[in-house]
Length: 351
Image 1 (spheres, rainbow, N blue to C red):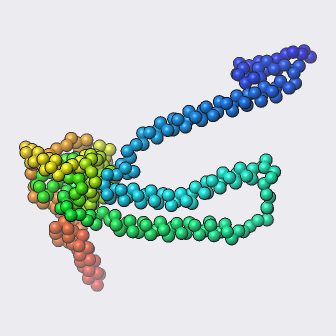
Image 2: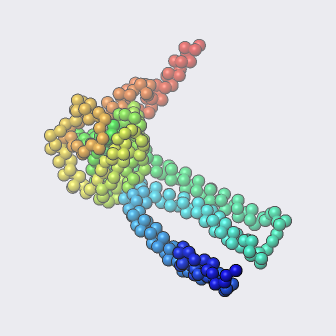
Image 3: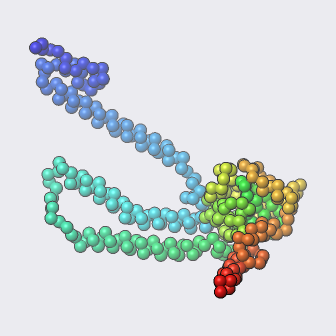
């Protein structure tokens, strides 16, 4: 048997300290492996450092998330509710994660100093902590959720000394038609309103169900054919918001966006005057043409609009709400009355 023959002679192992290890030196392999582990330990911290830096760069793109940086009172209260609820749940989640890591380390197989108690089965203190703390958190979470749900009811008008601005929103394929009934004007895919002034949105659909949502101001409300839903919002400062449809409604859904701009009262008045000078008018024929399916529509301004167009759109689907035609504010009452009348008629027919 020849001596001095290399046990390892691979380019792959050239950087591990084990290349050209000779059989004549029995401790060479162990020493080389030890040196390889030491080099790995030096490389790993650098790798994790770059990984942490990369993650921080990714997080830098999360600045200005509308839901977490709202500019309206309703949005701020909703953000606070989300934060409080999350922190309350973390009171339970974080200890569980920490205890999992601590127990895995403390009771590992190589730790001979760990206390071994195979017959342990009960601890009153642990039972109180495991059941008592979550129950108290659930009670508190339920309380703040109940209070917030009623205070943030989208149908509840906002308290203010300033006269609110009413905007009627109609979702069509695939655009938003906005009507200012108090000003006799209409727009497509753009609304302007004064800051620090309550905005009363009246929402319906002239197509499939949709969802009206301005993330930077507050929650969303569904738009449904034959129905009249309400949403009350307010902007605390001048700002340009992005409005979206939050409910899938077909091929052009992704482009169904609009601009919502909060301005000063003077700028709002100037904008209204600008719209009133537009040559376009939104009559019945123009509206019929406008609601034809189209995608990514540009902003349009109409100096006049057919009176009660919003209610006319709702009444197109009157068969969905049995009962006589009434004004928008009484729609739900009429629908319930009509439904009850239908039930009574059916009962009489069965008799």
